[in-house]
Image 1 (cartoon, rainbow, N blue to C red):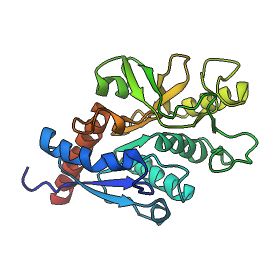
Image 2 (image 1 turned 180 degrees about the horizontal axis):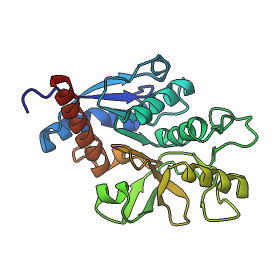
Image 3 (image 1 turned 60 degrees about the vertical axis):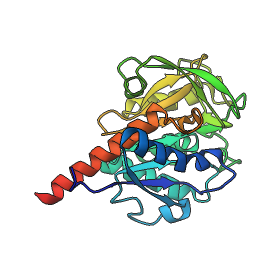
Image 4 (image 1 turned 135 degrees about the horizontal axis):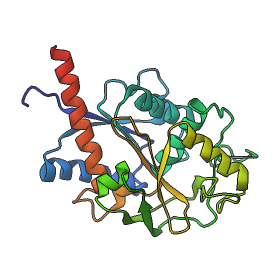
Length: 262
């Protein structure tokens, strides 16, 4: 294992000392190395830089961090698309979740006009819309789909998680005729059904059935959560989702090293 390069982690977001999740990252990286032996070589990539071709290529994992509205929506979507298409382990939290759903809708489902209301307040029919109730500072139960990546990572079918967001998928429930978030109703439900039909799985919901977790089966590791696992505890014991991303990154680095030696 001594010849395996350190796993390179792209932290995509507009770093700010006022965003709690950003200040947690150094603590989490230290804890992953000390507690789990998972050493990550992390680089911050501002969203404006992420728009450049190949900005996150060569990395072993991409973490799309909270802190929206991002300075460059295009950069955020470009980083997510590269991770999705190139099979690079990916985690999107809060704004990262929202933009992962948006990227999939635009580039896989052909919903080229899909919008995020925070980035485009004038959008008549946003895919990502204001939540009926803000989740800033909120904790809530998330129920996970049996057999999903999320359930496997957490080792349980229910978890209590922390949020800090005001936006989410316009269809809150995905169960039928009327969404519980925003004003999308049947149309929002149909659009999330379209995302499902193209392969995106929504594998975590809140107490009312509103979507809180998305993942992409067949991808080495592609997980997005509206909650923020980086806010778990005091930062000295990484959340299982953060630990799972780190493991996926280390495994990707090992595969990359093996391929290069052949």
